[in-house]
Every structure is written in C-alpha cells, then in structure tokens.
Image 1 (spheres, one colour):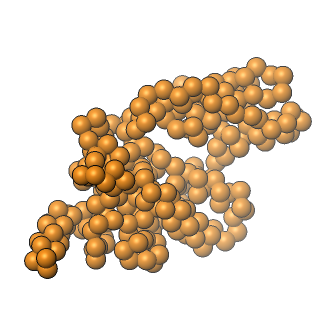
Image 2: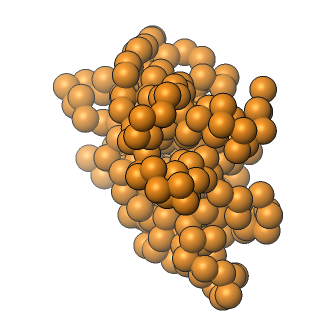
Image 3: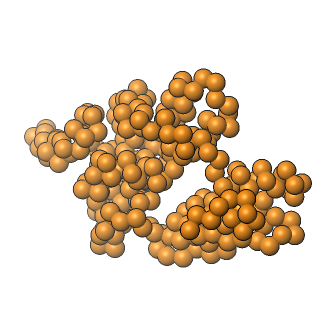
Length: 242
C-alpha cells in the first residue's frame, strides 16, 4: 500500500510539475488540485461529485477576500464605492479567464466527451471557474497566506488600471433612475438557453412606465449588465458600444 501511495505521488508530481512552476506554488497533496481541474462532464468511477464546483464556491470567496485586502491597502483614500467597482472588475469572469489563459490552464483541465474545446470565448466561464477552484485548492493545501501570495502574483499588476474605477452599467442606470425619481431598476430573466456548461441568458430591465430594454450574456449577471447598457444607450446616457 505504501508503495502504491508513493507511485501515485510520483505520477502526480510528473503530471502537475509544469503547472506548479507556472503557479509559483508546490502542493503537498495534489488531490484538491486534481479536483479543481476536473469538469462536471467527467465521471470518476462511481464518484459523480469529483469535480471543481464546490472548490469554485470556496475559491470565489478566497479570491474576493484577497483582492479586497490588496485594494484596501493600495488605495487608502478610495471610497467604498470605488473599491467595490475595482473589486468587481478584478473578479469578473473575463478577468479570471484571461489569467487562466496566461497560465494555459486549458492544458490541464479534464473534460468529458461533451466538452472538448475550452479555449474559445464561449468557454471562458469554464476557465474562470477552474481558476477559482484552483485558488481554493491552494488555500486548502497551504493556507490563506499561500492563496494571497498567488493572487498577488497574478493580480497585482492589474490594480492600477484606471478603467476599473469606472461605474458599471447597472450602477450607472440605478443612479440615473434615482436622480429622476424613477425608482430602482428591476431585472427579470426572460430566457435561458444552451447546455449547463455554456448557457445564454436573456434579461430585461424595467423602470416605471418606461420602455424596457433587453440584454444577453453567458451569465445572468452579464445579461443584466447588457440590459442596463442597452437602456442607457437608448436614452443617450451612454455612447453606443457597437
């Protein structure tokens, strides 16, 4: 049994050695790392829960804490609103997918037969989810300091981006509506299409008696932002991004 465990350990080192060099972190135990890199389309024997979803949940919180701590230290005079804008931009799926691509995580993600191509834009949510799961695996293996070190290494250069402090469309629309005493915008999901691993959401935003606006996105949050942006563009508040 001891020999078998040692062999598994050697195989893990050989398999994940390249990735660990990219991460700048060496794991003591590769089990959570392997889980973090496994998509739900894979079935490991009878264990249908051996995939990254639970780790993704944890990693999202660890990442949020690490980024919030970095922003709090770097911008001591920034308001809560500015810090929130910066944080939201740094933890959004597009940013995470970009960092995942920097690490070439797609080379290590295990998927089933129904999910063979994950490098395209349509699959960026998968790469973002895996990165969050990977952060959780570092946290579980090495603690919060190890996780913070990893986040600092790959996010620190992005903290200075002035565009991060710009208001997102939902915030801008809410402020616009409140300034005109129109109440708070209400968002409603109209449709959800596509498979679970690559859904498309359609959302409408409504403000009092005004004409509603529609938006689409790969997540409900993205669709809400698109709907708010569409509303602002129609009313001449924001320039058409097309």
